[in-house]
Image 1 (cartoon, rainbow, N blue to C red):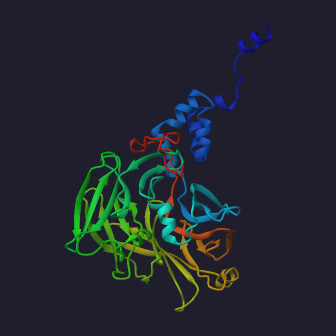
Image 2: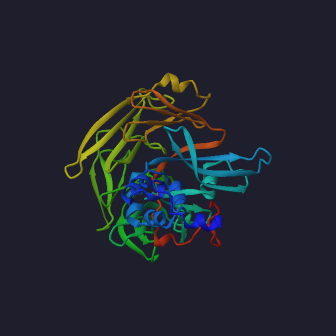
Image 3: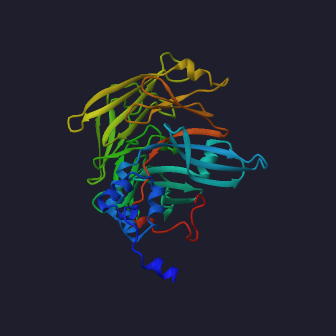
Length: 398
């Protein structure tokens, strides 16, 4: 009788479930992705609201773009076992958040050994283009959904991953050198896997490097175009690929010094819908790392008007306290506010634009490297990523 009476009572008013839908929408919009997924299990109305595509797109736009960091963890019990890990670094929270991980036997300490195990070729709208040995995958690490692609990385160099706004499909731009000495660029649609020749060039348009090193200068997708940072052989220009017309062109770069090293001192960024450039430089040749980082904004995209918004002096003495005998450091701006991330090979340091320390994270690992890509997490589903985490033959890093 008491149980029947309890069931007959109306639900108590004033709880979370009775909030107006527009207020609940605004609350869900501010939650991190994992919390949104959990809220779907509360009731049908929350499931509907938190699964709506327009909500998921709005939620994705609110997510921060965080730098991806690579490193390898060695098993202290077995020196032949190691774990390649790809993480994002939340500078303000001073923490690494694991994105994917991959354990295997064989403690290869060279960078190319790591690249064979787990290599990142592109990042777009929360989706990563990853390879493991001879396999190539599209993967959303937030939803754990994935799709397998032909192994383009084996005989080609992947130049970029982008979302094609007309077909609503992911596409891969890649190139290879033919017997005639020219570089042929191709596009493959992830959904249909159709591959087409789009351009033939005397030399690579987007990079000074012809091999896998070209992956260290990935493009930024903005206004339907892929943009690559300037290179030492062409410091005055930014290479651009129109993803609709499928043609290359050049646009002016701000006046920055571009090094000719494998790890470029120049990086392009998407700063809340504005093309930006981080440019680091050393006061004298032979320094252990840069002493200043400039952040440029393309204020007028059509007229190519660049403005240097921040000129950030790095606290060299503070950074030097953490250096080993042969250590060097690199630095890059990672936020719209001018936060700078410094990589010391076994430690990550963060500074605001005034040079104040905001993060200090020692890392007991090997081959620590701030990757050239950023990740902006997304819960938006996509047809090209139809496989789920429990599917057979899933990627080894899921």
